[in-house]
Image (cartoon, rainbow, N blue to C red; front, side, top):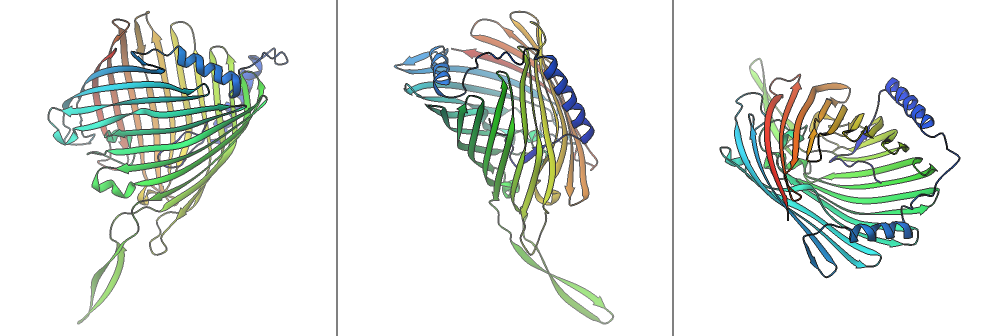
Amino acid sequence: MSLPKHHLTTCRAFPGRALARWFGIVGMLFFLSNPGFGQEALRTSLAGEYALEAQKREVENQNYNLKMGDLKLRFQTALDVEATDNVNYTDKNRQADISLRPEIDVTAVMPVTDKNTLVLNLGGGYAKYAKTKTRDHFFLTPDSTVSFKVYTGDFVFDLHTQFNYTQDSYQQTSVNGGNYGYFDTLAGISATWDLNKLVFTFSYDHDIYAPTETQYAYQGRASELLNARAVFLLNPTTQLGLQIGASATTFDTKPGYTNVVNSLPIGTNTFYFTNTVPAYTFLSNQKSVNFGPYFQSGLSPHLRVTFSAGYALFFQENDSSYAKATDSAAFYADLMVQHTVNAYLGYSLNIGHQVRQGLAEDGDVESYYLHLSPTWRASDKLTIQTPLSLESYTAMAGKTEREKYQYLTLGLSATYRLSSKLNLTGSYNYRRRDSNIAGNGFTENELVLDTRYSF
């Protein structure tokens, strides 16, 4: 399992007191929930024959609409109607609009041999706006992937690619208002080596990020991402280990300069001098290294905790004549809790603090975050979700704060299963960005009606 991927290298951290407090809580829960630590049951291997058999059962049990030999296909269509009171996510001159978003998704599973399986997930559609024609666009769903798994002995290899295209600028912390479309394509390979008590995981990915708007072309980049993890299984449901990652990001736009002639009148004379300034916005190439411990435990059949922490180093390759960014370092950590409380209520909780290399002159961007996703099962047919997301960002230029801004997202959605093939979801989302810089905030109210049909 690799570290979370972000468009730029990201590390996650807790403040010191909170970190110690969470270590105490996790440790207490761990010992209270494992009274039979010495009596271990057999666990399922992550690789080798056990994993291969599990993969075969998954393929055999795959729901499908169409079968062509060994190839199984599942098709799904959706139609979203979205209404918003701030289509451009701006502080002033708010404009309401309605959009239609037809979408089609396909999943294909193909056993190539008895030890190799090809899986394709592809989803996409078109967003059509009633008023803001410049917002019309095609999109690809973020979970569009192709994966080819190979099992051999104690190893499992996964060749994969993931691709996404969207034009929702509220998802980009560096953008405020207007259009912002981008392609994000990742391809790579991961390997898992299972030695029973000790499990090694390695991954390499090549990520290409390409904005489609001319004014954001300088953000186009390619990243090489390396991750490795070694974990020791304390018992069948608990693992403790060390993870390390590295990245190198190269931006497409290279430094360029122009000469600006200025005059300075002194007495009866005028003196002329030339300043060299950037001809356009460009970003420094970046590298990073991060390392630290990793912990995961199923504290009970209904409660799972995952925690990672460590230290990250960021390096900048500044152009010698116009340096914008400096090297930096930060601690990171991340806590994920997944809990099924009872047959009617479950939730996931993700909290932490992240530091990432920033864009343009902003330097590093530091953020605290909390994501809570409760799911309420009102009946066999009705499911209600009430997500909450709170993020606080500080953009730094060296040791100087450039901007502080906060994102708040509140949601309420209800999904009703009309039949075994047809689901209807209605949702409301409230988004708010507050900034200490005038004009950089916005609020949005959004209503969505989603109809989803599986053939």
